[in-house]
Length: 273
Picture 1 (spheres, rainbow, N blue to C red):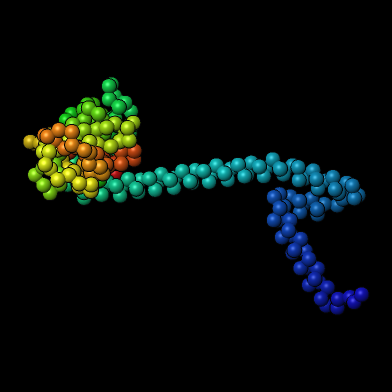
Picture 2 (tube, rainbow, N blue to C red; picture 1 turned 90 degrees about the vertical axis):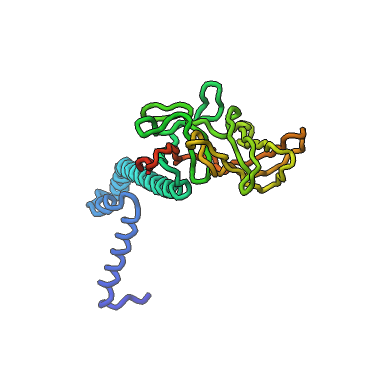
C-alpha cells in the first residue's frame, strides 16, 4: 500500500479532525460528546460507558431546549396571526368607509353571535350609547345591509340580522319603481331572504339586485343599501304580489367589521380599526 507523502500527512490529519468535529456538532449534544471523547478513557468498556452516560445526560437538556424553541415559535406564530388579523380588519374598515359613506357611521366589531329571546339571528357589537348607537338604527358592512339595532347598552348593542324570520325590510328592485318587503328565512334555513313585490306584473328575474327603500331620517334604514340578488322567482300564488328568493349581499357567517348608521352628520371614531 502506498503511503501518503510525509508533507501531506498533517493536512490529511487536519481534515479528518475537522470532519469528525462537524459530525459531532451535527448531533444533539455534540459539544458534550466531543468533550467526553477527549477525556482519557480507563479502557474500551469504560470509554463506551462514559460516552453513553454523557448522551443520556444530554437527553433531558436537549428536550428542554426543543420545548423552549417550540414555545417561542408558538408565541411568534400567535403574534404574526394577530398582526395579520389587525391588518385585515383595518383593510375591511377602509372598505366599509368607502362603500358605506353614510352620515354618522360608527364602526364596530362583532363580538358575539347568539340567539336573543325569541330571535334566532342576532349578533352583539362593541359599540353602544356612549358612541351614539341607539335602537332602530341600520347596521351595514362593506357589502350591504346587515340588520338593525334592537337594544343598546353603554358599550355594546344587539343587532337583529336581516335573515331573522321576524325581520321586515322595505325594499326596491334596483333601477326600478317596483317596491316590496324583504323578510328573513332564518340562518337555520340557509340564511336566504324572501322578497314580496307589491305588483303581480313586476318583471322579476334571476340576477336582479334588491336594495333598501329607505325611511324618513334613515331610521331604521337609509335608501339604496344593497340587500341581495334574486336567485329564484317563485310561481305566482295570487293576483296582487310576486315573490322571489334572494341571496344576501352580506356573508352573515363571516361578519367582523360593521358600521352603525347614526345619521348624526359626522362619522364616529375609528376604534374598530
